[in-house]
Amino acid sequence: MIAVEGLGKKFGDLWALNDVTFSVEPGRVVSVLGPNGAGKTTLVRILITELLPTKGRAYVAGYDVVKEPEKIRRRIAAVPQEGAPIGFLTPYEFVYAYLLLRGYPRREARRRAEDALRELQLAEVRNREIFTLSGGTKRRVLLAAVLAADVDVVFLDEPTTGLDVISRRMVWNAITSMRERGITILLTTHYVEEAQALSDYVVLINRGRVVDMGTPEALVEKVPGKYVVEAYGAAVEKPHMVIGERAIYFVDNPDELASSLLKAGAKVSIRQRSLEDYVLFKIGAISES
Image 1 (cartoon, rainbow, N blue to C red):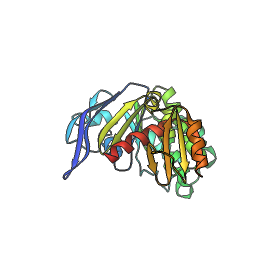
Image 2 (tube, rainbow, N blue to C red):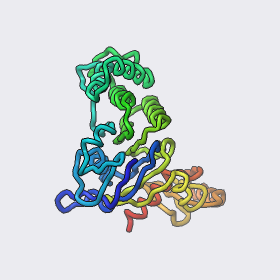
Image 3 (cartoon, helix red, strand yellow):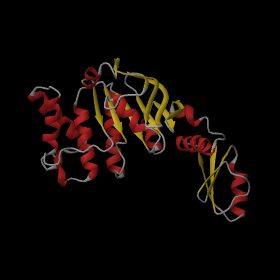
Image 4 (spheres, one colour):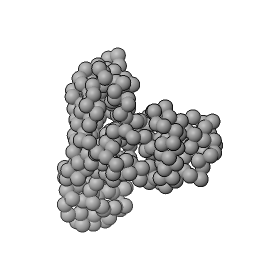
């Protein structure tokens, strides 16, 4: 449903993206992870036909982003990173108007709007002007519009940034619901636990290039050792990574190391490895090279 081949975008002398290649099967959720400035938003803008690539090719729903943008726009919906619903409308009016603009008959648009607002727990505020709502609620209104539309592919550019825990979980539920309906979703996020919880596939990018890709489980398996030991305040041997005052070790048997660190006066935590550990390990290694 999404295919990217050697994609690149240059701004002046800077390659924001360079030789990016990956594909997404229909009905899957793919998360694009990477630090600030990695090229995530540039990638999304190309795929939603808002920005032309400098080189390479990209296809969405079988259509070329350069040669067939209008066909793509009819098959996709997007929530941009800085997107906001129209403030003087109510949530119901916004979702209803969005569906009318997409060509739905009025009766169908009303039904879909009501269903989407209910699913995202916006029924109680359906008739309040949007400018009076919290930032998290406004974000959910955008998601309701996307959820209500019958599209093949949805692009979500950091949809939960700045949201509280409850609002974030509601967004997660909406993403899961869209996936169950067979919609393909490309999600960019800074929250690694979000990618691990929602994704069938993860693409890790840094400085405009693909670093690695795979299922969350496959990427976690690349972390050396089965456990992560974090130490604050002391280190008894060279750690795999240092972040601020935190020394990080990847080990198979954590007990002996933890005991030594405690004797040295460190505060110690032990946990199983996660996708976040893989991202830290991989990006950290690249940043130091």
